[in-house]
Image (cartoon, rainbow, N blue to C red; front, side):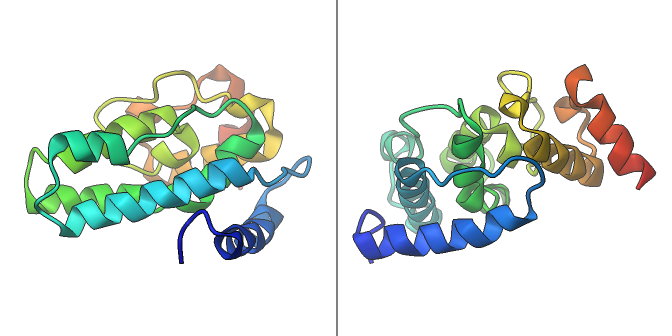
Length: 169
């Protein structure tokens, strides 16, 4: 199935509708464009993991989004698929270090902090993970950070109440 086909879009919509039920706060709408682009990226990154003939230039082109997250919809829709990228990166690093796929995934994950907080990266997100002020996304970020506690990804003060809530729970 092509990631941009109507059937793929419908499948992504159904998966997103189930996924967002676990997110507190105001409902987050599905962003079909982000979902299709993210799913295509994950497919290409997975292919690059097993196809050792991929050049660094191809990987750079394949593992890129046309935009960064600017809405709660962008964050959560991409996270539906990007939450699996840290494991893909870990597998790429197990094959060769340094690995162009692992490096590219690290760069991407720093742009998408809701998913990036799941990765064991030496550097933190490119910008503070305010997650567009959505309370449910901030809670999810705090839960993920509390599980891994990577100091480079420590939430800034805007998320302190969520971190405290997670720690006291």
